[in-house]
Image (tube, rainbow over all chains, first blue to last red):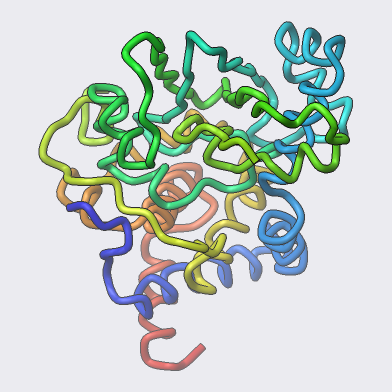
Length: 199
Length: 103
């Protein structure tokens, strides 16, 4: 039950998709070219580099960080990122005392405009089950060992509300510009399963 | 709804398995299934909440034993049949044609 890849043979799944797509196309309800464009956007254009730019701006610009923490949806939109599955965003700030981690226990909700589509492990039964009951244990599997003095907060996403973790800015990065800072930010650090190492 | 999808806190599901350099999609049919999501929202006008509720109707054993985009396919069919955009018979007939290489 642990593998999110175990499934019916791919050909049967492919047939099921093709049946629905071809029927809807024949009925004039969908346009396969529009579908191609959607796939291309989320496969190649939207992804965690967007979120990394948001994080880098927050590190570099205290006024932006304030806006991001008080109205994340609007502040993220300032950088041009908005739309499907990011309509109502909340940014969670990691501090030396508090570490935030995000899950969707019921399914797979995830902030698409800033992180793209979720990895399989995020959607998998083991992560959804365990990160709420044993967050420190799950974080340890990701190589993240937090001292007992750090409070761990697990946030359960809903269909309407999506979270982005603002990781702590690593020490020794004072001289870096925004692009260089963004290059340090990983997807997993914005889900909250890892912390960023000192470069 | 307290169903199999409500996984928070459940024991015995094993470790979190990760894949290095994971691609966005693992097969071309996953691309098409993903594309159907926004495309069907446009004409059918359902919400994410309703879509997820349709996923929650997947029989429990199948829910755990099928992949993410297979969940989506179940939800598309469930929702679009309910709203009268396609019928089960049309889908079954088309799948039979495709299996026979007729389409």
